[in-house]
Amino acid sequence: MTIILTDFARARLFPREPRRNTIQDITPEQFERHLNQAPPLHVLDGYAPFCKLHVHRNWTSTRCLAVPITEANRHLLRSDYDARTKDELPVLVRWFEGLDPPVAEYLIVILYSREQLAKEGTVTDADWGVVGCMYTAEPIETPMAPITMMRNALGVEEGGSGVSLDREAYRRSVAFWSTHANWRG
Image (cartoon, rainbow, N blue to C red):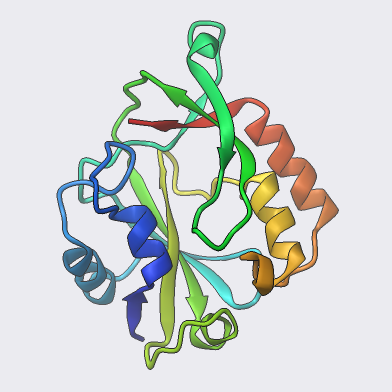
């Protein structure tokens, strides 16, 4: 099985201007090489048949991305409209500023199949492509953000995957993200 780091994921996980809330200590090439050489601890099913999650013990100093919202940190929450790429419409997002989260125990790599990548405009000979990564304390999936689920349901022309909205998964996502937020460094 071969894995590539897609341009979409490269820009988000390894931005030109390094940030503290992205993958630390390694280059994109080292990350891709590690994924192709080190077997994952677990392989989880993703939200659709074309999506798999590879759970790896964190081999970097990358910090947990989702942080519980408490009375002690609620004042650090910020929000704004943001787009993941220049072609996507901005959506309302929130995040913490000024936090120092713990180092993640796990990196959970989000993979799409070659066929799905082609539907979304990425042609590759690799079997799988990285489209994202979760940095977590537990070897379990962080629920997809509600807005990402909605974008996916809109289709590839709006930056999604074309997967219909699963109402129960959406409710679980809302429950998690009502009490957690990402952070920016």
